[in-house]
Each structure stands twice: as C-alpha cells, then as structure tokens.
Length: 332
Image 1 (cartoon, helix red, strand yellow):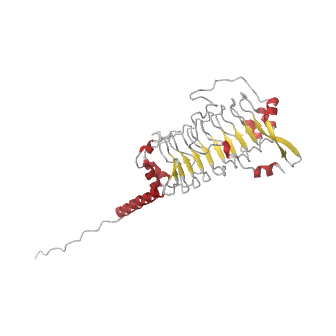
Image 2 (tube, one colour):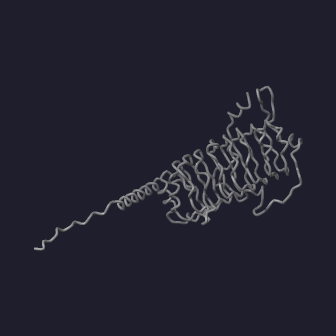
Image 3 (cartoon, rainbow, N blue to C red):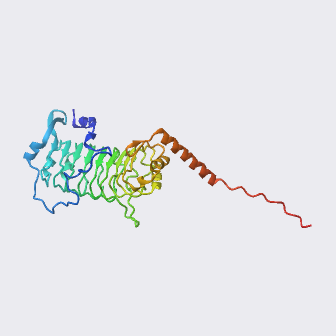
C-alpha cells in the first residue's frame, strides 16, 4: 500500500477540535498564555534534536511502494523549541504536534508533503502561512500571535482552527483553493472593519460555499453584514459573546439556506423580550437557537407573524384607488 492509498482512506479525528458552544472555557488557553501576558522578547535557542525525535516518534506505517516502513506521527509538545529545522528530513510524517513551544517559523513543515494533521497551538507564530500541502486536512494554530489569514491554500483542508489570535480581518481564504474547507474557528480574535464607523463585522468568508461550521465567538462583531448566498452550505454559526444589539441584524442571515443552528448568547440583542420569536420570523428554517430547539408552537406563531407581515407589505404596495370625479356642472 502506498502513502497515497493511506492518505485517501484517512478520516480526520474530530475529537481534537471543539464543535459545541456549551463546552467549559473558563480555563481555556491557560496552558498557552495567561490573559494579558506577553511572551518574553527572546528565548534561549532550543532546536529540535534527534533525541527528541526518538522520544516523540510513533505509529509505524508502510511508505512508498509498501516495501519500506517509517514512523509517521510526532509529538514534541512543551519542549521550549525555537527551531524545528530537523523536520525537513522526516518527509514521511503525517501527524505532527508541536504545541506549547516558542516557535516563530513553521517553514520546515513545507517539506512534509504527506502531512495530514497539524497542531501548532500555543507558540509565537505571527502567520499560518505554509506552502500548499496536498493532503493536509486538519490544522490548528490556536493561541499564537497571528494577525491575518493569508497563505492558507491546502486543497484538502477541512478544519482550520485560529482561535485566540490577533486577527483583525479575514482575507486570503480562496474558495478556489480551499475546496474542502467546512469548519473555521475564529473566536477570541480581534475581527473588525477598517471602515470609518469602526463597525466590527465578518469579511472574507462570503465566497466559501463549502463552509458548514463557523465559530466567531468572543469577538467584537456588532453587525451581521458579510454573510452571503454563496455561503450555501453553512449550517452552524456561533456568535456568542459579541456585540450584536439590533434584532434587525438577524435579517441579514436569511440568505443562508441551510443555517439550522445559531448561537447568540451574551450579545445585547438577547435581552429583547421577542428575541427568540424574531429570530425564527427572520429565519424560518432555523431549528436551534442557542441551546434550545424551537417547539412547534413557537414555529406556528412565527408563521402567523410572517404571514401578517407579508399581507401588510402587499397592502402598502397596492395603488390607492382614484376618487370618483363628479361631472362638471353646467354653467347655463
């Protein structure tokens, strides 16, 4: 069996990525950095060594034509690493975990063209940019110092985790290259627009037609502009802990035909008395809001309101009848 055969049969282990909004997060990220803590300016150089490789390597698999074997999994967490140059020689690696080190450069990974799974959380990375890796399916760069989303173009990438970074705007995610991407995790960043009014909003995702799951929790988003009909596969949207105050913003999500679950907890708009009802009026196909599924009674009431609004709009568009003109009175 060749490397390519193994790669085709691989199914990503989703257990390594959080998918539900109700998980505990009070201690999240403490293993990487405390809130407000900055990394020291310099660390003592600590390169990856052969001894570390021997300790971290596992999972012996066939390579190439199937006549040779190599270890394909590497875990070198919490080693204070500043340099992983040695990885250039380990071209058969498929699973790599270099989390909780002091790395600023991941370029040696460009040589790992069979890489399937990458975890580089809790380093000092300022970019997630790598050369196109043809088989990479899951990549996590959480809790770094990444400021943009440029240079991510792996054709089989399905799950991308960028939470807890310093991203201000999402750019460079090309749907023509990211044809398999379905889950993006962007919570805990600094997403915002450079527009004069400084409205925080979603940008750069509107053309990702295969995206099914989007996490934007704990940002400063206060407008729901940026979602488009092109996002035709989006089913789950987490906006918890943002700044959406106007219920009218929910109308901007009605163009998402497959949206079934929406999380808006800890936004100002959730304090409105008709919050749940308004959401369902705007999005009739929505099945779950926050942690609760809609009941049939709620759905029926929303249908009535929607029908009433439709009738009122039709009446407004009807031309007003012209008044009957009385015949002119004779002057004789």
